[in-house]
Length: 248
Image (tube, rainbow, N blue to C red; front, side, top):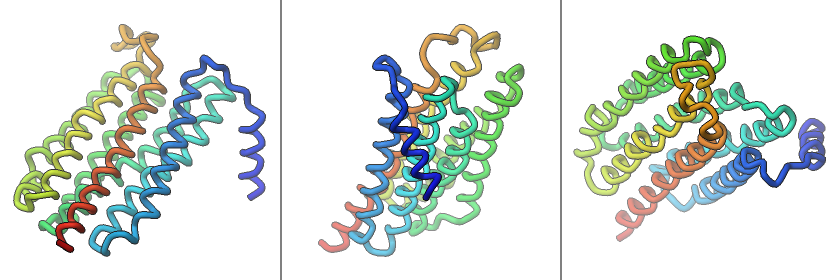
């Protein structure tokens, strides 16, 4: 409690420049994630047990992100440097949970835990190699980025054309529609992160042409807000549609 209060005091004493758009996106991201978490958690009891776990996971994703955004904003305000370590800690917790959402919505259609663990494993490889390229071995950013990209495209293939896609097609209706929307988030929304990676590893590297073009943190912050909150809203809408159909 004491540490929490000290954080509040530090945040209260901070002055943010009106043109500090990076800090602004950190703050907005934190507030948006907090609001989304409250929404998901408070709506859980509106659905039967079949969907509560999915809504709970959606709330956990945005809650974990909100906590990390609070710390990342403070780190940025104090140092003016990108909070790479905190960001990857956030991702290593939230991205696998986003993969779990595919399993949860397809569980009734026959999804297996092996499918879930495969997606979790691939997402972990994607993130760990991305961190190595961005923070540990920046001189080899293109190599680690390639490995991370391969893991990403395997995930894309699995959910668009693999077993997950076949299960969604078999389920049909609202489940198939929700699955396709989540797939679009992964294909389009997650593509924001490679852009941020190229910007962050640009100086003196293979991606140098992008260096200084835009802020890596702004790219990441916008991507996080769209993807994490959007993922949860898709699952929420699926629960609403399925519950309405069950009571009709």
